[in-house]
Image (cartoon, rainbow, N blue to C red):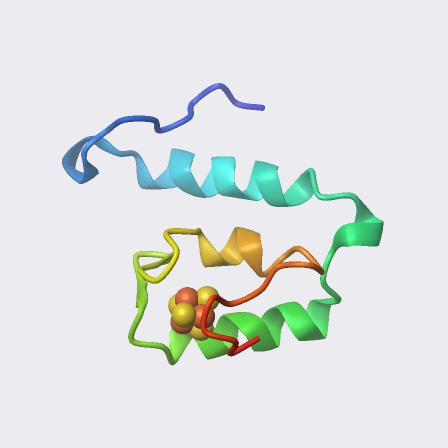
Length: 82
Ligand code: SF4
């Protein structure tokens, strides 16, 4: 854990590099048995990238960070797209 979490900050204050590192740390903490398979993960993210509800890595429908939600085998799109 880097300790550089972005909490309660405005977009103008956030550090994109720290954001990505923190997100990756959360993804890395998912136990292997609970992770989506790599092909499924890529397909999920491809679906999100084509979705109007994706903005700055977050899903406007549920507020989740899609790269984190999609990394979990049990993760679901709130609109049933994956
Ligand atoms: S999780 Fe579903 S609704 Fe949200 S951005 Fe991805 S495809 Fe769109």
